[in-house]
Image 1 (cartoon, one colour):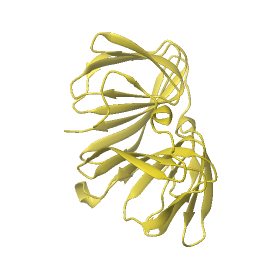
Image 2: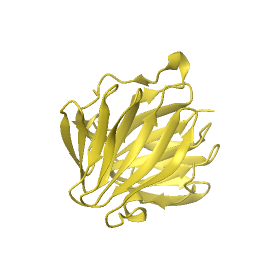
Image 3: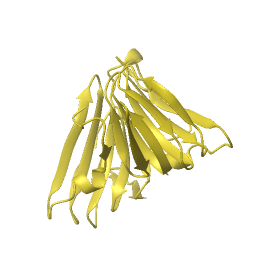
Image 4: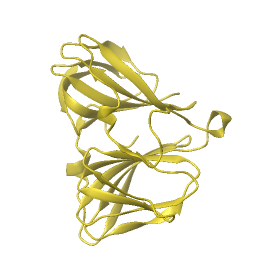
Amino acid sequence: MKELAGKIIDFAKENRPVPSCTISKQIYHKDGMGISIFSLASGTSISAENYEYYKLWTVYDGEIEVFTTDGMKKTLSVGESIFTPLYVSVGVRVKKDSIYKEIEFQKESIMNKSIMNDIVKSGEVFKLAQLLPYQEGKIVNMDLAHNEKMKFVVMSFDEGTGLSEHAAPGEALVFALDGEAVIGYEGQEYVIHAGETFKFDKLGKHSVSATKKFKMALLLVLE
């Protein structure tokens, strides 16, 4: 991954739109998975294209309209997501400056397919933070997608709960969805808030302590 480990990342602040332009920044692309940030200036669009694999789009700033050539139109605001439908051309257009993240779950995996959780349907607008509840004194975990090379999960932490220090087998990105937590990483502590991101290097020692109720998505590269 191109982002540096051990720092708070704010994709919205670091990828501001440029007037009349569409901008893409690739963060990761390997083993059938990709992560990119798109910055679209007001009045711009990305033409509809057809894919045989899912893409997860999540809005960081502004508002995007997702459209397909068969007539679907869905509007996504900040914090909302959509899994793009398969085998139909899908594109994006904006009326105001907007920034969104794209995660590609490509078909280069076991059984030539990424396994998706049935709780979400392609073409439907949802919020990752609303997929699972808080439970008193507990940590709740839900797998959303996985294949032989990656795992994408959402987690909720009640205030005062956390994960003790451990090391992941591969690189990982934490996307904060709600609340606040302290991330321990290689002997340093970092406060993370909703909308921010943090990267762990492979085998980087880290912990999570929920100082308030906290929800996050975790994208883990398996090696």
